Length: 497
Image (tube, rainbow, N blue to C red; front, top):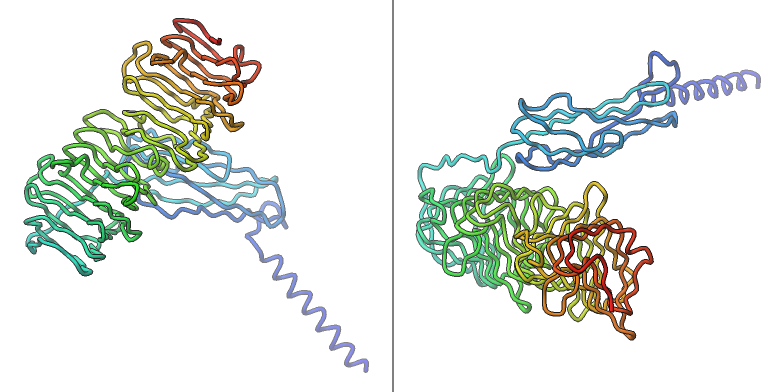
């Protein structure tokens, strides 16, 4: 019995030692602070090859087995010669920067505990010039005509007359392929067709012209193609955009009953005869991310109000001959949407209406900029609501294409009795002129249908009439006069009846 007890005791002791070894082995120990462990850190970064001009969002994880409070630091270990890139935030688990030069950016994340035990991780982000791609094709296979059954293209092809994808066929183009178009030709994805052109970062797909002349070919046209298989990724489209009815090298025709549906990401559009891309009203953008549209004859692209919410903050739209804008062709915002701050201002060519026989809530994020053409307005209808809340550092700008008092109409709350209506840290300039308009922000109300809106910390200047006009039944914050700034408005700061 005594012998059995001894064996049992030894077994318990051995188990305790094993458990001790397991727990003391979790995490690297800090040699300067016995018993303390270094934080375990990791940078989570999927996309490590990006185009110059792209905003890079960095995310990390940090864990301390001792339960210590951690402090964080991001820093550049190295970056390309001549780069002035800076990290926007350096003391949280997230940071971002914009790659301004081609080359490698090496970034380090450091987590430190209360006794200065340090965990580190680094990541290398490689930035390349947008659309960097070499056409290595020597021999081409000539193609043309209609694909009415599924077709795959892999290699080098010369398009000698128009290609049409129809009859529920799917045209798949493999990574690294090149399609070279002869003069005036196009690729049309018809109502019943679909196009999947998905390259990779190292093997993009090239759609180019036989001659490197702006507008030499027409482009890629999605003709009322409501197909979830439509997908473009890691492609370069160049020297298109020229043809009757064409408004972009990638052009989508849509209607309310037959919209085009499309995904596009990590791609470059350049040297278009018109806009880089054009999406008719009712086009459904399931994805639009990290797209560079540059060196086009007009602007980066044109689209309608509903599609604008799909455009991400990382896309780059600078360097276009018609001005650094995305062109907004107005239209109705018919679903709850958020408009981001883009790399360029949004040029508004036609009226925008929030609410079209439906309850619709539009949010505009800090830093967004809108430039209005003559006589254009933004209207929030009875069933609509607008939340445009910027910050002191990143106000939301609503201004005119031409710096003339009353060049555009302004923002109109049209009997919109919605508690979500909120304007804060916005600047409204050169508005207030139109039939029935009395202010840069004009609030229509009645006793039975008052508009409700909070307006704070905002600036109203150079209005053709008042900075703000309130119909007598309007419901606003009591400090609307004192909490906003007014300057050079012809009729004064705030008017009412």
